[in-house]
Amino acid sequence: MFNFVWGVGFVLVNFVLFLICYRMFGKQGLYAWVGVATVLANIQVVKTIDMFGLVMTLGNTMYGTIYLTTDLLNEKYGEKEAKKAVWFGFFTLIMTIIIMQMAMKFTPQESDIGQSSLETIFGLLPRIALGSLTAYLISQFLDVRIYTYLKKIFSARNQLWIRNNGSTGISQLVDSFVFCTIAFAGVYDWNVWLQIFLTTYGIKFVISIASTPVLYIARNFEFKS
Image (tube, rainbow, N blue to C red; front, side, top):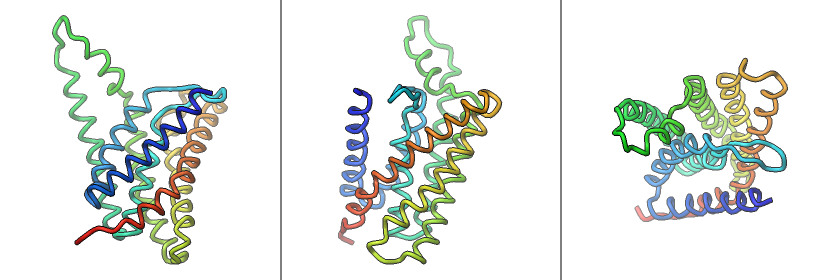
């Protein structure tokens, strides 16, 4: 029960900090958020927790805010800006992987206490790293395209929730499938793989629904030219 209650607070803190970042720094703050969220989500995924008898990984909340960010960029600034944010996040993740892999190759001093921790956090197996990068790139661009398409059909201001949840729901399904297939296919038997896939997608979709009011609030922010 503690993990659930703490998790609710954790989600709220993520959303509040997102709104503060956008309120203080505007569109530039959204790009910064995508970069930071991409890295933090891939760090948090190393930690697993138990909630209601299910094993879950952290990172889904932070990862979900990336979809929130690109949808907000698409809504207020257009598809081109949303795609730019996707590429920025992808570059940030690639940069982090390269730099940290090189950093870990340094021979640690005898009294060093950081090497083992860095290896745990950043020493991702090649399949997991490849799965994360591939899933991110495919699903994020898919989210932008679907959002743009839905924006033409459901263009009314009060239909934002359809555009947001429709695009995110589909793209996160693809994201979960691509990541779990690349990272875990053949590693676990079919039943375990299916449980990981369903719980991963379920958490992401719940976060997407919960973020809808946040998107409405952020859309109404006005900035001086």
